[in-house]
Structure formats: C-alpha cells, structure tokens
Length: 351
Ligand code: NAD
Ligand code: TYD
Image 1 (cartoon, protein in one colour):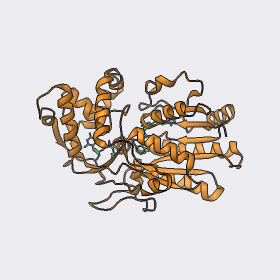
Image 2 (cartoon, rainbow, N blue to C red; image 1 turned 90 degrees about the vertical axis):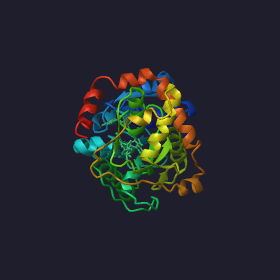
Image 3 (cartoon, rainbow, N blue to C red; image 1 turned 120 degrees about the vertical axis):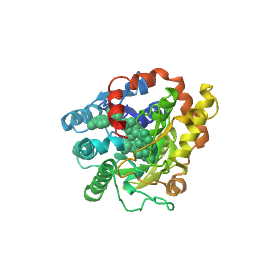
Image 4 (cartoon, protein in one colour; image 1 turned 180 degrees about the horizontal axis):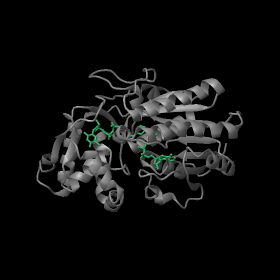
C-alpha cells in the first residue's frame, strides 16, 4: 500500500536520521516532515534529501490543529511517526510549561486531528509515538526497564512524555486508534544539539572549555547509536501490532565519568594532544535537581519478536560520532552561535 507518512520533528536529531532513512529507502512513500524549527530543529540536518521527489517539508506547530488539518487533507496522510517534542531534561527543569504544552497538548492535538481526518476508520492507518525510557523512572544498581515496568517519571520532561504515552494508550483502548509506542534509551550520533552530554563535551574539549560533570559523575545511562534507533523505528513501524509497546536499547550502560574519559581519550588522539590533556578539563559541578541515577533497557522483546539488534558496538559508534563533529565544524559553529551562548551561560552559571 502507498503510504503518505507525516514525520513530526524531522528537523531534529533523531527525526532527521529517520527522515533520511525513509526518503532513501521507501521511494514509493511520500514523506512529509512537519517541524516548528525550534532552537533544536535545523534544516541543515537533512539538506542532502531536501530536493528528493518523495519529500516535503512543512513548518508548523503540533499544537496548531488548523494547520495540521490542512496538511492531513492536502497530503492524504495515512501514517504518522511522531517525534516532535521538547527533549532536554535541564530545560524542563527551568521551563516545565513548554514541555507540558508541546509534549502533552501537542501530542493530543495531533492525535485528535488524525482521528478526525481518518473518521474513526483505522484500517491501514498507523500512529507511531516515539518515546523515552525516562518514563520508567530511575533504577538503582540492578534491574532493567521492560515494557511492563510501571511508569515513575521524575522530571518535568519525563512526566510530560509519560503523560503523552498514557494519552496515546488511552486513544487505543477507547477508540481503537491504531497506535504503536517505543521507549528508547539515550541516543548519540551526528546532528545532536550540543546541549546533551556527548556533543556538548566534544564541543567543549575542542575549545578547551571546562567539562561540567554533574554530581560525582556516577549516574548511568544506556547509549544507543541514533542510526540504530532509526532502524528500530523502521522495523517497529512496519511490523508491530496495534497497541504494542517496544523498548529499544543498546545493552550498553556507561557511568557518565567513564564515558567522558573515553571521549577525552579519543579527542586527545584526534586533536594530537598529549595523553590526558582533555581529562584535565573535567570539572565536577553542582548536581542536576532530581537527577535520575540509572537507566537500563531490556530490549529482549524487540530482539525476539522483530529480530532487531544494534548494528555496531559503542566503541565503533563513538569514534564515528567524534569524527563527524570534528569534520562538521561549520554545523557545530552554526548551532552554537547566537542564542546558544546565552543558554549556556544561564544553564551553567550557578554550578
Ligand atoms: P530534538 O530536541 O533534537 O528535536 C525535536 C524536534 O522537534 C526539533 O526539530 C524541533 O524543532 C521539533 N519541535 C519541537 N516542538 C515542536 C512543535 N511544537 N511542533 C513541531 N515541531 C516541534 O529531539 P530528539 O532528541 O531528536 O528526540 C526526538 C524524539 O525522541 C522526542 O520525542 C524524544 O522524547 C524522543 N527520544 C529522544 C531520545 C534522545 O536520546 N535524544 C531518546 C529516546 C526518545
Ligand atoms: P543528557 O545528555 O542531558 O541526557 P539525559 O538527561 O536525558 O539522560 O545527560 C546525560 C547524562 O549526563 C545525565 O546523567 C546528566 C549528565 N550531564 C552532565 O554531567 N553534564 C552536563 O553538562 C550534561 C548536559 C549532562
């Protein structure tokens, strides 16, 4: 069946990798990228596919139901992959209301428009909601998040994503709205906005700036290469049953400080610095408020039911990632000019 797929947030980090994958792989589909181009959205991320015949960009807000209705009608949308969101925990601590607006109201608005346009006839329709493992809360030393772990979000970001997940499931149970949800661990890779740990630290190391490690640096995250996340979304989008949830993860846990030391080592090699030079930039700063201790995903369901596994190791992925940021100096300079400077000063001034 021909698919007209609305991808929201396709100018952001994960969305841009997904848009590229779908535009190149599914020439018979029409891909409509709907994105507000907030500070995190950047059309440069997808400049290589912008003239493809099966691709269209629409600048718009997921809270704007009138524009969404027009887009559904004009492009006869029969599938949605929803990534648009406010996505940074630190920003959610300083400005929770924008997260509630975009992540909760925006998701509900988008679903309502889809439901209205599809007139409650859902055969061959799909609404895929992309979510995070942070909805499950914080683990101590042991255990993993599975698809049946109870929700226990602890930051405004994760609470807003959890709310949106609940709404998506409520639409499935109430209206049989054709939903699929995935909850993924921390992503890393090309085109990630340098507010998140890995691109921020690459940028700071390159510029000999302090590396602000929150608390003791002993929080643990489970890292997945962004291209592998995009592949997993592809597999789930095409094969999951309505109403199902899949956890996506790299089985790749790192204590922040250990990951940061690896980054420093690779950067020393790439920049021709003496061994240990970048590690000297490590600066322990005041911890994040309510900092979740550990996230770890059990992705067995995805492996067993849909045969998905990460395609590369973390050691490979992190080298590819560092090289990308070093080779794409213009991209990094562009996104760190202007408003980024004041964000950075404000965010780190009292640490
Ligand atoms: P991002 O912040 O890089 O990109 C978000 C995109 O959404 C941007 O292009 C932005 O312009 C757009 N956007 C924001 N508000 C909008 C609105 N009101 N209307 C339309 N577009 C809007 O985020 P990301 O890291 O690529 O994350 C994408 C999705 O994946 C999010 O839903 C996030 O919760 C989820 N996720 C992210 C990670 C991660 O590690 N980054 C992990 C698991 C899940
Ligand atoms: P981040 O990339 O913001 O992702 P998330 O909070 O969604 O997991 O942060 C990853 C980890 O790195 C998290 O434990 C917080 C920590 N961190 C720092 O120590 N310093 C920083 O400047 C940032 C941005 C994050």
